[in-house]
Length: 244
Image (tube, rainbow, N blue to C red):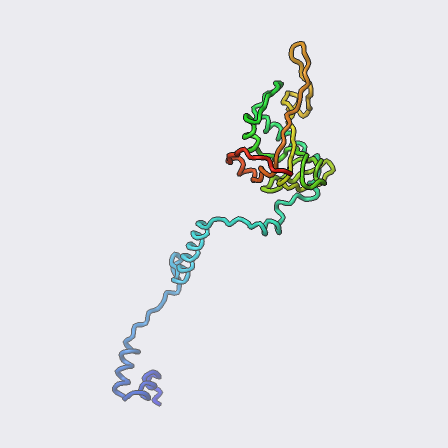
């Protein structure tokens, strides 16, 4: 092999005739332009791979913004325990201020005024009480198919579709099913002293003294199986009582 000849031409001569090898070497090797990349790249320019990556990330971000947040399932809620009340928070005295707040809320719903006796009927207050929120209400069980629940009393800490969870004065958390259960709650007549946490039982009008009676209501749980937000917009109809 001639050492002065280009190695590419020498290899071409082994596969082709000398004339054809010279023509291929001249056309493909000697006359082929050689494009050189500059040593320093322009910082504003990016290669195609980086541009594709940026476009892909932008599409992913746009898709994530369009997707709605998927709520947790009932099983995931139970596993995470986000609605569970810790043992340290199961104390009756913690929820007594909540009960006082609920009294102010229910007085406002019923239109009760300070230092004035109220006359409330089922026609005037029934729909309002049916759509009210009972978180913080003090309920007692007067009738139930489960006799062991009769007599329980406590403040509602959770109102679900089918149950009430209450905290009793013994600092116990009880879950009471609504179905086949009758709840009772009383609303004291609003007065200036009640707003400051002291329950007043008497008021004087003119020369006569009258006994201030609490407003007493009974709630049939079988007809009340709705979540608190759903009750706010639901129209209730009168139904026959379901026997216990």
